[in-house]
Image (cartoon, rainbow, N blue to C red; front, side, top):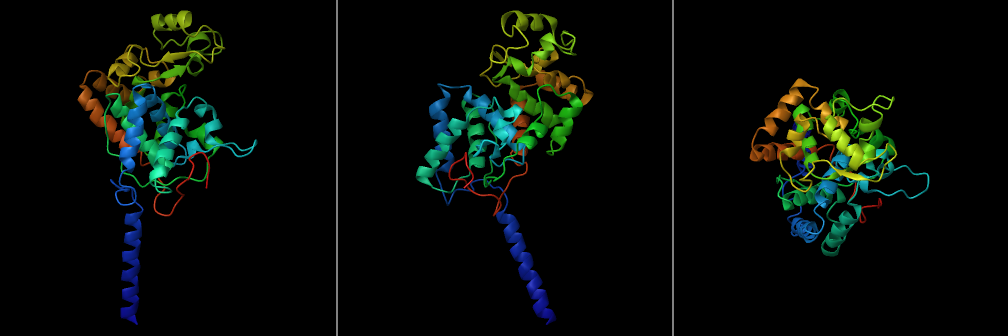
Length: 326
């Protein structure tokens, strides 16, 4: 009887280890079930990126916002199915996220080849990496095997996505909640080297910083005057778009860090990186370092972010259509 009990414990331990192993992300997860999956994603990206290089900025922002809410599970893609359903994409931080149609294109291509196999969460992660590479940015490993979440929560998105007006305490708290540290905060902020922002995300710095019609003193005055006179003409402007890294918005490089040191980061969250000694030291290191070193360390932070709260094994589902739960 004792031997039987010991054998049973050993069997359960083996089964448990197998289950744990199968539930992990891994490189080449689709090698047997959909061998061309990653090439299909890459091909669709490459077909579109030359005509729309801004796609890279849109996708990396989508990936970031997805992972910070309930983990990297594609929940940002879910549409509301009733007028009173409050999903993530309706939350204020996500109202200007774009790239949803592109993810649908990739999903359609994959479904025609391997129906029901590749998750929308993995599509976001792979397409983000491939689009950054396509514009000359860094590459990184993308282990796959993520499954899609069934829940999309407006409040979680509103409360957990780091805001452009966040101070350092707010930013590092929200990053720490996801297992990310100061270095990750600085590196991932470096993605602001590409893309644009609506004036509404920073115009308070120009026109009404403390509520008395003043300007943010941490913003370079010449840069602020230029923005006010040529781009964001009033606090009410919520349609004009401004480059986050003027002159190289489609180039993944070190200029973002150099602008932050010149007090020309567009957001309060950019300026916040100079308010903490550890963060400022990292900004200075990247601004004065090599692009190769930045790419290498940025890649590590992207891999780390891509593992936040993933659903694997039997958790979640593989959505047939990315915008709707099965």
